[in-house]
Length: 293
Image: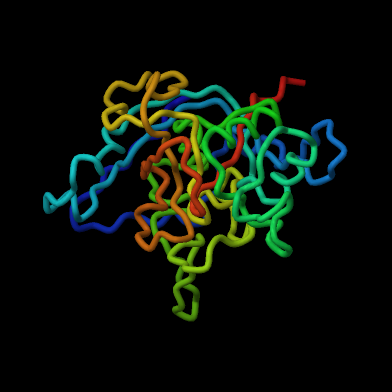
């Protein structure tokens, strides 16, 4: 498969809008997102997934922000460069971030998971069932994915490939503008961020071209990879899985609490300790691609 090209941008020229782009032609033959029900009696454990085809893409940040141009960007925030080619095998990924309802169902099914401490019991607060689960450590998220679908957390490369939706050289899962201007001139957010009231129900905003919801905003998402500042300079082309060890795990996508829109881009990298449980961090799972029929 031919890699997606990186579009050159001239200084002073705003990036083109790519809002409303349709998935590439080779993706239009994929089946629509389906529901895979695992062998547990709880109806809450039905899993909505989308297949992601094998392919390759350019991973990382292709544009310069103002802080880069004027030399104010510290080295640690340039960890999303250099742009590098990545080739991935096919996989499936959850359409939504794992919800309180599904996490509670796994607890009830005997998965050996403890409820998040803010629940105050085995079930989430009433009315919060469809919010993404949070206050879950990396270890708990990885254990959930293994029990739930026989899967795991996505690698950082898988997460970014899925978040981009098969479209090259964009900033956000929907395009290059963080807000959408309506015919009446009002600016409407395309993701849940800059809030002081916590996350919203999953799927509250339109999905990206692959059919994934909330890959920007709502909650940061755990990935499988250890974090390393310079990993992009040495990342292998085929199915990179991050450094062999480290102190922190990579989180992606930004959260409801972030006011800076740059944190919700498809390439922004952040990290925290794997035993961290925070109200701004959740996750979704991946599993192997279905066998050919």
